[in-house]
Amino acid sequence: MDINEICQYCISHKIEWTLHVTKRLLQRGISSLDVETAILNGEIIEDYPDDYPFPSCLVIGKTNTNLVLHIVCAIGDDKLWIITAYEPSLIEWEADFRTRKEGL
Image 1 (cartoon, rainbow, N blue to C red):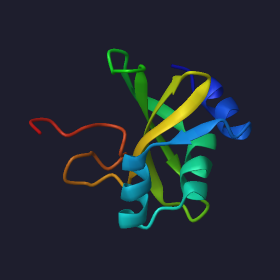
Image 2 (image 1 turned 90 degrees about the horizontal axis):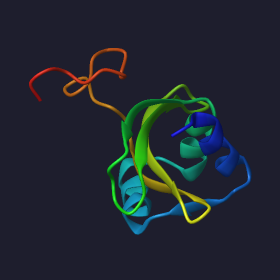
Image 3 (image 1 turned 120 degrees about the horizontal axis):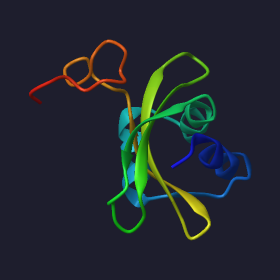
Image 4 (image 1 turned 135 degrees about the vertical axis):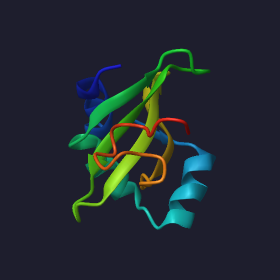
């Protein structure tokens, strides 16, 4: 996947929010604007080419308030599918939030 292509879907508002992500964003106090902003200044840190129904990836980016978010998204059916978004935890991630800790 390519971050520039992901950003183009975001810019053109061709975004599909799954029921799962909608619930999780409400629970986590993350807005859709936070997710879009993080994508637009983000980078792909993991690829999941075998995900179904569409290959997906993990994007890291920051909100307007410098909150670091991880966003799992996919491109399919000419849409950007937002699967989930969360604040990464130092329990699972190194301090750069780009590298998973070993043994987890």
